[in-house]
Length: 335
Image (cartoon, rainbow, N blue to C red; front, side):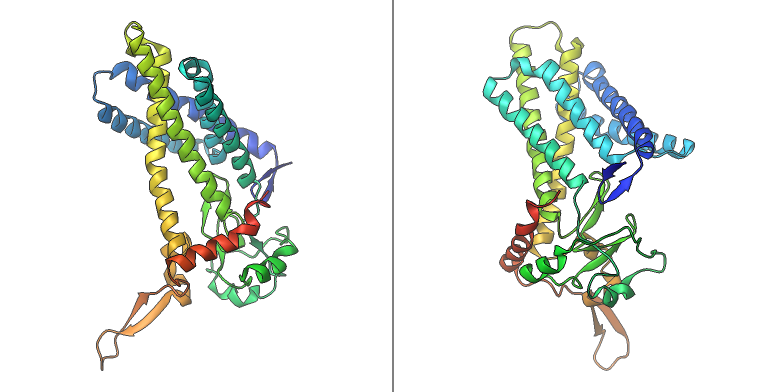
């Protein structure tokens, strides 16, 4: 048995999806390597756009193939193998042109990234069961399609103590995840890339890991650019026909694409923290009565309108303090 997220998954159900993910990592990276090889005359922004289109095409092709043969890939494994591929290209190709200090820093960044990635895979986002105090009060929010909780979902004994210390009762903002079929305390969203729900107990780790990915990928973009610059300065033959330089360029484009969308993603989560709202609550606010404000369209008329309100928003500074206070005791113990 291996531990993936808050659930135990048989090893046999993990090997095949991981192999499929590994195959599509190689396929997508090979497709990206064609950009600097055959489109070297394109401007940089055109190469970036073409690389993004290729990634979308490979992703769509992979999804069609998986549905056709009725097998599923592992999103966490896909992320893991992409990081390993980037790391491998760095060690085999780029490292030779990088100063020792920068080399040490980048390898440290990737090492810490892998440790954090493992921790969030195995972390408890804040699982709650029927045995948890006060859960029955929020059962009514569950959709008819949502299933009963599995007896295997065991809440940690320290939840009640932590709730008292942080001021978060277990009945506050407990939401149901349809992917995990479980109630999550402080549920924000289910993250396929991290193979786990993001909730009260691992939200801070999620934010730190997201920042870590951005820093590591931005560092790779700078180091690979430095390698390409050095390669040109020493007068190598046609740069675009050099397989090593092609790999450096294609992986640099890949990391830059990742940085661009991850910065947007990080900005969204910072916004949510500042205004004390979860992603799930923003998308599905009509499911939760506390976010609904009923007002009359016009005085004296019976027509009413349901508007959005955020009862948890107490001001940006207060919201950030609340997030940090709730996360302080959870970040280092997430495992």
